[in-house]
Image (tube, rainbow, N blue to C red; front, side, top):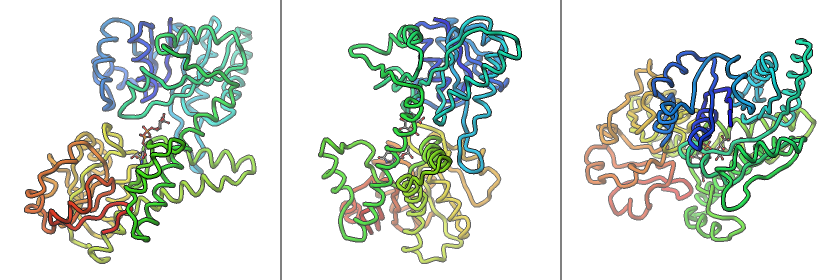
Length: 441
Ligand code: UGA
């Protein structure tokens, strides 16, 4: 099938590459000329396992095209994905200006029937807005070409985006026109094997499904972080509690890992956006507000431990930091806990020596001017002469360090672990003062 994808961000690029991989003919449109040129040369703007070869191979095979030419994009696909960003505006609501701009463009150039699919995470009611903008634009052209607007949210995770997209657990389709179901079945047939993963519903339910999913996951995390704070005060171990409750199949083991707060481009933004949506219609979403507050507070957890250990005066101290990305297998630092940690330590006059397997360029881009941040080439180099180690991201290669070397290189054998990588008793036996989340010192 011929498919057009507007927006070559995370969601758009991964979706496009995966659709091309199964044989569809996919054209990607973006306003960013540099990005388009780079992609044609095989340079992928993000770090995502498996994505680079997928893009390069499908581009070489002529199934994946990149252009800034919106008119050509509209002409190409019967199916037109909108996968542009929906950044939060000042009050945290999702800003739809890019989505509506694409809707307008499609309506301006279309010469035959199109199925327009909202893939971006958009507030409930956006499909209606897209429809309105398109109808208005077509009317101005004096045209009555028919079109459909479908909500088909994406559920991929950064770091596992290609695999998630190749083997989706569900394909949510929100539509009010049964006629579009068949072309969408055809589009997704290669991903819809063994059992039917397509869940059909009305448009608003599909739009809300995306927010409800992310808010539920964020709620699980904030709940665990709250219990971890209680565990600490009550002398319990949250890791034991986690196993204890996860074994109940109604609760499950997923997304109940306590830590130094959730980050990324999705949970913080989507929880906030749903809060704003609720407030706009006169509903106080108390639970979601609490989820957000608990998370904001949790991002200060490690600095609280640091103050508890060193006292409030950490001026002139150096902290080794392992992990800058908001989670492993990505170079994304949006809303990362490491940023709150570093910015708080800098305010207190401390220096940070940081290492991350993938996010060094990103850290350089964001904080490159600072003299109180030293970006180190290896995790061992970050430890050199530091007063303590802080861990913000659970990269695999942080899990089995050489503890003897660590003890020698650090000025003091102190670790503040925001991801509970180690066993407190064993760390004590190894001679470390070890702070974990929900486990105390
Ligand atoms: C999230 C969802 O998991 C995806 O299903 C969704 O499609 C995506 O948002 C989106 O809306 O685009 P992502 O932001 O890539 O995916 O990352 P997650 O793996 O969900 O992690 C988010 C944050 O939660 C990370 O900072 C992670 O460290 C934290 N987390 C996760 C915990 O603190 N504890 C856990 O148990 C799990």
